[in-house]
Amino acid sequence: MSALTSRVCLERGTARDPLAPGAELTTLGRMFRRDVLHFGAAVGAATLAACNPSISSVLNTPPLVGGGATARGPAQIVYFAQFGVTESMIREAISTALAKGGDYADVFFQHRVSRTMALEDGEVNRAYASVDLGVGVRVVKGDQTGYGYTEELTADALKRAAATAAAIADGPSREAPQSFRADPGTHAAFPSRYALTRSWNDVKPQERLPFLTRLNEQAFKADARIKKVTTGMSDEFGAVLIADSTGRLIEDTQPMTQLWLSCVGEQNGVREQNSYNIAGREDIGFYSEERLDRMVREAVARTVILFEAVQAPAGELPIVMAAGSSGILLHEAIGHGMEADFNRKNTSIFSDKIGKPVAQPFVNIVDDGTIDRARGSINVDDEGNIADKTMLVEGGTLATYLHDSISAKHYGVQPTGSGRRESFRHVPMPRMRSTYMLNGPHKKDEIIASVKKGIYCTNFSNGQVKIGPGDFTFYVKNGYMIEDGKLTRPIKDVNIIGNGPKVLERIDMVADDLTIDEGGWTCGKDGQSVPVSQGMPTVRVSAITVGGSKKS
Image (cartoon, rainbow, N blue to C red; front, side, top):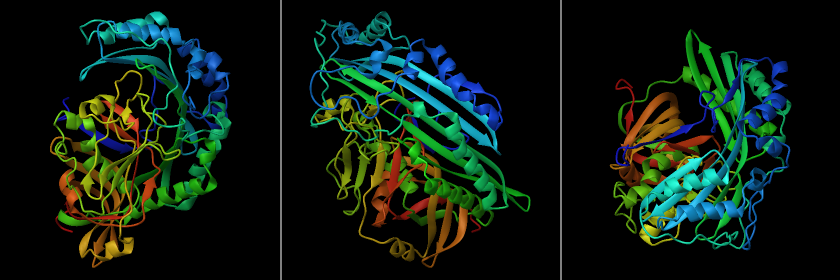
């Protein structure tokens, strides 16, 4: 599907759609608690080792924790040396990739071990692990990209993938680098934004299970109307290695975890469902008692309030977006249109807006890869560029786009560390990381009091946008009516429909309570999904179309 008509969507992870990237999953059926305790030894070693003979040794080797290279100097392959990856293998692959005259070539190795466990009404109904291991080779010629990948980490397989990628070019060969350097670019040191105290590879199923059991039991105790509970935990640990024809070679280890809780309540024959989840590039210490208690409070409260909720009125209304997950407004309505590939191809409505006012002077929007341990944060992007904080809108003016290396060269600027890909099977493209709006001059209570009749949106589930015109829609699961400057009746199941640039112009109040949502958001674009974060202070939009009930 072309960029003009492609759909990009943002969904928050739930028990129905947990984070579980990677290869085909080996799944165990419904189990009782005592059965799952045998899961770690059986699957953690035998299943993963069966996927690739090299894995068995890696599982018994202390993993590299934190970041890869730490300063400029000769490169040293650390993590991927366990798979037999050498500089000479990489050099031969890049030489093959440049054999037909490509302007640039890189290789992207990836290893990822993922585990998921889920309970339904106290029983383990899902427990599985997966391993993904492979390498992709990219050749760039002008604005065109050739790509090949393999799941076999041998010199011959890598050269075949490189020859496939090289077919994009037609010209005299170029020389591959004779040596590689660990080069963090303009930084004095490689960042370490998610170093772990303990690797997820060392966490046994017996240690995961109590978190799920606690959530399950507390959710049932919290409200007698809760009739069904599903909870689950997923985690992953792995690494990437990026080497390119300029001589850079960088490794980065990349952890991730997510915990989710879904509740079904029943009252007078009516059933309602809602959920809550938390995620981050964290270790097991992330799951504190405070976070677990908050998960139960939020999931149960969001579920039972739906019994009181009414349909929102339909039509154009002022909208107040609550701090936190309202960042979906930025992601869907604005963020995708500021990804440079859409602008390079003149398919984004922001293609001619650099240096021009797009919002009120107190509106400042950031896409940030630097927040410690955030789900959307990265040390380096999937091209090896350091991920920084990018001011997209500064003082109401569009300052820049999100760039990968191709778009940065096209525009004559530096990459913003936004070149991301789902896995070694995919090419990188400009993608968001953690997108949020900075604090403004107003107060939350002041904003709510300013609305005669409107809605207050508190909990979102997903959304999508058409990049060309900037038209978007997203789904509000929970919210409240605002009547005479006060929050009154709860509302549910509301669709918000609008146009990104117009909504940006209509943001007329921004509070000082910025919150980065900690949920497990995943962004889809052109068939690729990547983890992201988002945030927002309380914001008022003077008018957005609400798809509700005409009777309200």
